[in-house]
Image (cartoon, rainbow, N blue to C red; front, side):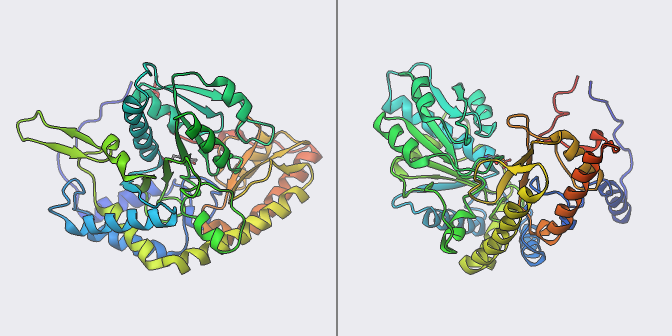
Length: 426
Ligand SMILES: Cc1ncc(COP(=O)(O)O)c(C=O)c1O
């Protein structure tokens, strides 16, 4: 049951509101202190933060449903999608700004489903086959869209088991997808192979680059080897890439991009049986703020290619340190071969839950380890973490030493969670 709360009779003045909000935020994680490695808050630096915030405030009242009323937002949107198409090497593509990775994936799958109605007319039970490592937003979208999902076990290096995927196909399969990279282990699925196979079977292929989409192009320019994932890969029809992750835009901004503008007709929702006339939208929301679009534009324009390359290199240095130092700690190992800047580590001497509880007790916001495989997920999603990474490694060494000594108990009740575990209620 959700409690009813009497609606307040009188209003409060601004200072009172401000002091209540300050008090309430005291329990929030200290994200600026960098003590939440890998979850929830992407952060580049204070300047970038300021630029995004100022734009957010300036455009707070705009409504992106009405580009004719707010040509500023239309222009920012056009730039964002144009920039994304060029970063992703689309030749004749199309793209939209959405509210986040989940919505981008939703719009990509909706487009694929409606594409299949025309291009795979024999299909009556549309189906998608994905690896177990794909983000849950695929199933969430599929649930809303009436698609069946089959998840297959990954290979031992956590990439897609392509043989298993082929065996799981049937004549109703209309979508395949791969992650670039996967959320937890940080490896890339074999996008080239999967996309080529999908194309040979007239199946839609989606690359989920929610994490890597706005980091990989710059890491690649810095000379790092990034597995193929974008529209240079034949057969990739859509890409999700989050501006609010490595684009460092305030939350509520992502891109869904298509290899061809021809898919636009399957993407848009158009309705003409309403007293006000024709209504068309390209994404899920009706009314939605233009503030996050303006803020994403401001951050991208502020940083430019040079700024993003610089930040990518700073992040890369932290990644190298973690990949070098974690396996030097007794019993710890990093799973597979993380190819960007998210990774997962496990232990062959200690219970991973105890290590996670130890980190939480040392003031690191840590979510419960993933079960398959048993791992603590780590990502350099914030350069605030880069400022304290040595402290993290020292704490990790101490925790392992204490667990080995066997006289310390860490309290797992301090562990956080990924997603809203309270949403279900009772
Ligand atoms: C690989 C991947 N895809 C999709 C998503 C969903 O993105 P969002 O939380 O912005 O909806 C995430 C989120 O972390 C992700 O890591």
